[in-house]
Length: 292
Image 1 (cartoon, rainbow, N blue to C red):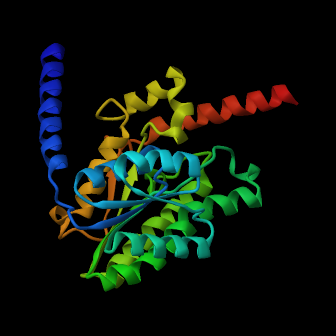
Image 2: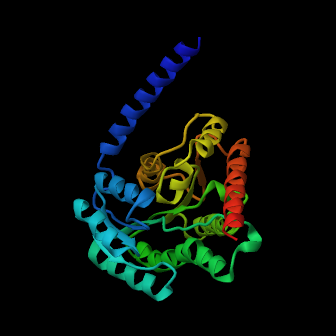
């Protein structure tokens, strides 16, 4: 019984992957200009590749200059160095992207950062930085890009939130608060700018990126997450990029103001990730005690 279920699951996944490849190969974003923040690696890089494959001309924004130019080169993408915490710098970067893209019709706000420690140990600077990158940076990019998108006839905005926004987990409460703000921005902007601009958010669960390498470095941490996930695995960046592509395309023309959760069902129980973070915090506390 178990082996037949496994074979069926594998067959279904293979069929789904084949269908996804057909969708991805469609040039349904031809003639559109896209800006992706946090594009040098991880989810942002996967999104830039996906939009490029769909025919979009992509401007890749990131604060890591060396990584950014290396990432943009294979795509013939426009590389613009910017720290999204800097309002004036974001405005200038979006202006540059608009001029070089000729038509700015897609904005993907992906730049983000997080930390893991108890709430009372966060400093003012850590709090400020987490909100500045995740929430203020999203606001600055939206504020700068929307006039150009209205001028060009509309388009789509996709903001990267997190399952932690709606189900806060221990150790990352400033990050959860910032991402909850991103969802609120998304809902409000969808009402303000519809029908000309569609605005949606995505909330990835556990996905392998440079931000989550600690989780993947130890099976004791990772296995409880996989066991608590109905699909029995974590995600990869291309699966997130698939959904972003959909939200940027005309296939989602009747979708706006939504927060699409992409977590394999993990946020249904939520206990698995919470226990994992508790374990991580306990390990960090023990290490800190040893040092002192």
